[in-house]
Image (cartoon, one colour):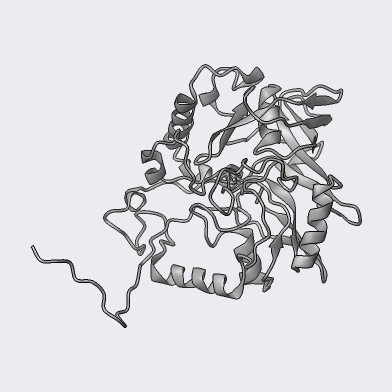
Length: 382
């Protein structure tokens, strides 16, 4: 057998990228504030902050660059992919460093609002249970004594006889902190696609009681979503299911908001891991890490929505991204791609929205707020 032919000088090589990007909500990104220093937006649910995992075009960074010509932005903090609300970007490296200093000195205050199952206690509730990351790929955490310390203060705002609206004040910034603490208290977020699932057992993880190993839990969560044809909600594909989801992996997954961000996704994600694809909790002392973030943060020398990066993503799309759902007429099909062979229903708008919203972000010299979401109104009906 002859030797494989190697490329010669001046040979042109091209790699066609074949992608299936998960669906996201069609809600627009509202710009709350734009000045010489910062851009503050109201992020819709289901959008990761930056390209990660299977997301490339359906990201806040890409959309701001493509639709609003806002480029060279520096990420200050991040939100989980399924978390909506106030999200800040610095326009210059100097502004980013200035706000970083406030973060390190614990001068920033964050306020979230959510709608949870059942009648939440009227008195203030403080939860300080440690949290451990179970899987970076799927973006799952749980309360565990071996986890990292975290603290969240909760206060009920209203109760409609079935569900409660709760204000959340995180004092630390662990992955999925608010969601995991609410699950532990027995009041998970009403439509949380991870922490309010039957896979956790009859009490859905209340009090940290889980009758499964971590591997069994992950398989049960994946199978529950697969049976509902909602793997896209987790941000994973059939190829992801085929790998050992319980293994320690460094891929940019669904948790931090990107853990994926999932955001696992991993602070800077949604919910993608940190930009270096490492453990999103490895720099847990970094105060920049937001509670419902998906990746750890470091100031990028070349922001992800720079001209060159957007051009690269556009070329990727032209060279072979699958823009249609698998099996639809007109879509590019790869015989080796499992997703091309799948035919799934499109998720409803309700499935793409989780009732967790970053309402306020306050620093030493600034305070930015968004409107209260419709589902958090006292007279809202399901």
